[in-house]
Every structure is written in C-alpha cells, then in structure tokens.
Amino acid sequence: MANNDERMPLDNLSVFLAVVEAGGFRTAAKRLGLSPSSVSEKISQLEQQLGVPLLIRTTRSVAPTEAGTTLASRIGPLFIETRAALQDAVSAQLKVRGLLKLNVTGAVMVDILPPLIDRFLLRHPEVRVEIMVEDRLVDVTAAGCDAGIRYGEHLAQDMIAVPIGPRSQRLAYAAAPSYLLSRGLPLHPKDVMEHDCIRLRFSSGAQVDWIFEQAGETLSFDPVGRLVVGVDAAPAAIELARNGRGIIGTFENWLTPYIADGTLQPVLQEWWAEFEGPWIYFSKRFMPAPLRAFLDMLAV
Image 1 (cartoon, rainbow, N blue to C red):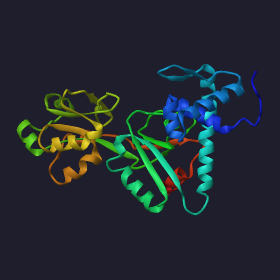
Image 2: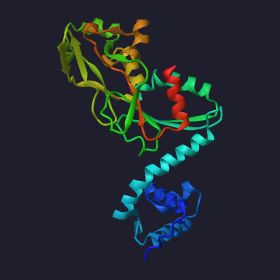
Image 3: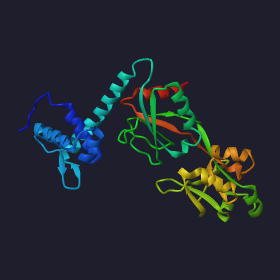
Image 4: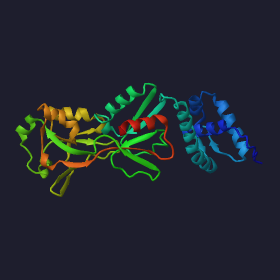
C-alpha cells in the first residue's frame, strides 16, 4: 500500500528525474555526485512510498513505466522553474550570476550573436554562457536550455519570441571574378543551372534553397552542387568560392566583406530575396535572471 506521507523527500523526486533524463542509474549518479547504489535506493524508496513502479530495469537499460512517464512530464517543468527561482534568488543582488544556456542555429554564429555575447559578458562578469549550435527547431526547455534562436519557425503556444539582430536579411549570390570571367555572368536566375554551384546543407539534410525575387516574382531553383558543404563549415565554402570554384548562395552579410575587398563579385543582385531576421524564443512560464539580463541588454 502506498505511503501517503506528505513529508516525501523532494530529493528522491529529483533523483528520479535525473535517471529518466540520463536513461540510466550510472550516468545519473555521475551527474548527481552519488553512487549508483544510492541512486537505486532512492528510486526504490520513492516507488515504495508511491506504491507504484516508476522504472523498468533491465541489464542494459532503464526506461520509465507509464506512471513514471506521467510523473516525469508533470514534475519536470516544476523542477526547472524551481531551479530558475533559486537562481533568481542568488542573482537578486546588483550582480547577475548563473548560467545562460542558448540553443541556436549556426547562421547567427558568424556575425550576429558573437558581438552580443561579448557585450553581455563584459556587462555581467559573473555570468557563464553555454551555446549549443544545431539547425533543427527543438524544445529548448526539454533540451535544458533557457532560450533558442531561430529564423521564422512555428513556435509552441507557451513560447515568447523577441527579435534579435537585423530585422531583415537577404539571400545573396556571388562568385570570384576569375570564375565569372571564364564561365560568364548569369543574366537570369535560370542560368545558374548551367554553372558550378556551391550549396550549403543544414544538419537536417536539407540544402539551403536558392530563391530569387524581383518585382513580385519569386523563382526557386535546385541546381546540382558541384560542392555541397554543411552550414557549420560555411566559411570554408565561402573560401572555396573566393578561389574560383563556383557560385555560392548564402546570407548577404556573410559575403559582404569579400564583395567589398573584390575577391567576390555579386551575381544577379537585382534578384536577391529578402527574409525576416532571427528571433530569440523562450518559455513564458519562467525566466532565469541571466536570460532576463540578456533580453534587457537587447532592448537597449
């Protein structure tokens, strides 16, 4: 029979969540600084108090039961908010302390986010920042992050989005003057199909679309890439374009310095498509002090 003692220790619940998140006793024990036997004992105590099994244990894995899954989904957000409240209490003085953890698309890591983080670290010397870079839209709360930065994806209803960086950007195309001298300058977007193209690929596997716009007309092409490079290595792709390996299509702000120094020449500039700039998104249910301080800095 379940023990309904209202004094049920909360640390047992915290250990249970750690086991579910880690997928095993040993990994959870390492994160918590406990022995695996202590973790197993606390889980057994919790199951005895509740009168229901929470975990299915095998020699190779640990997985939550239906009751365990339900419990973890309900108390997980509460523990996250509790940790945020404790962090706020620690940061209640004039100095902001703690960790700001962001999950961001690689597109903002070239020239948008780094100067903002630099300014933030100078303003708050006792804050630590951790940045996870991935292109897929993720549940930032489930990923253990305070906020995410993405371009125009559909967000969950419990999320708030705030603009960060330029409000509009353009998809630009360029090639080395030596390449264009030998292959000719495209006069219409369809001409890119006859050129060597340097394509960028997201971690999801999709390639960056080549979209062209002019006077209300929108054209989309999918040229075969002579070179296909992951977006995380975009600087290398740009360098290959500067070396004459073909036409590259990517963010205008990434190409601007090389167009300015003459190592790249704009291609079909009158067709460059404009799109909305990035947004930082976060849960409206809680806001840790470092995130609040970061948003306050953006508002200035």
